[in-house]
Amino acid sequence: MNAKMKIAVVCGGYSGESVVSMRSASMVMANIDRDKYSPTQVVIERHRWYALSEQGEELLLDKNDFSVTIGTDKVTFDGVFIIVHGAPGENGLLQGYFELIGLPYTTGDVLNMSLTFNKKATTDALHQLGYQVANSVIIGRGDQIGVDEILQKVGLPCFVKPNNGGSSLGTSKVKEQSELVDAIQRALAVDAQAIIERFVSGTEVTCGVIQWQGKLKALPLTEIVTANEFFDFEAKYNGESEEITPARVDSEIFAHVQQLAADIYRDLNCKGMIRVDFIIQENVPFIIEVNTVPGFSEASIIPQQASAVGIDKKSLISAVIEGSF
Image (cartoon, rainbow, N blue to C red; front, side, top):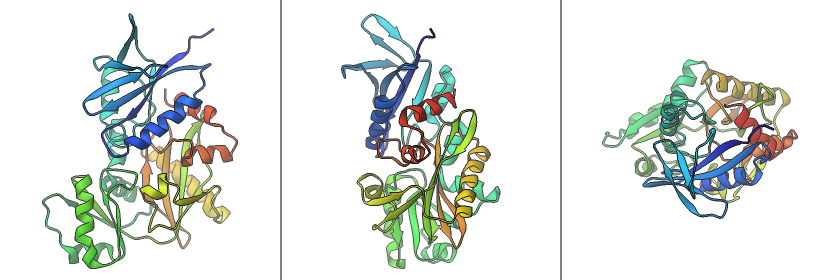
């Protein structure tokens, strides 16, 4: 009988998304196939990294080789399931570390992750590849904020977001010119750069993509309906939105968006699982964001989409691991 693969389920991180990451890790730990894998939860915080024993005891982790000592036994891992949303798990830093020590992991490589974490760089790359994206402007801390010049490019209403970040933290929808500077300052409190994007109105949908049985598989679309101004943190994680799977869109558009999501996976050299967010405006899908470590809690969208095509959580987790290593 083959030995079980020892998997580190890495969660936490340095951003406001760490609480979401911990929920995602709980889902993985609860549903991973323990006939195939021996999982250990590893928590990354800015000033310490530690593993959790089966009894919940905190065990110091040796960053030199990413090992844990349990009693007199030194435990090393065969691979890493990265479920850190935000820094350092979604921006390439953690991937670089695992490359250096030779551990396989379940996300794209350093370039893929650092590119997709930067919203403006992703938008520019997708535009060059021929995808439809919203017009945008970038502003850094200390830059002069030329309100008239920005609005000439993006118009009103517009969205202001941290350029590097997720879960809609620090994001605002701006309807009036007078609101723009405050919105930019809110975004710059979260990140060193803010991106201001043209508002695209239409139906919001999102599509997960995984490796399934050796092939790329775009999951069914989920339609996002929220009473809030946009799909913000509360809508995403506190139940203030309706997520309808499969999305109520024309079948041709449905298939087209799935194809676009799969093409983006290939074009950006993604790995593991991703989720691509779109706004469909007059039958034209605009790419809003590429999430390379998407939410993965019990209530998250990708598990919902997988369930809609008969893929349970255990099989989904195995697919992410097997499609990455």
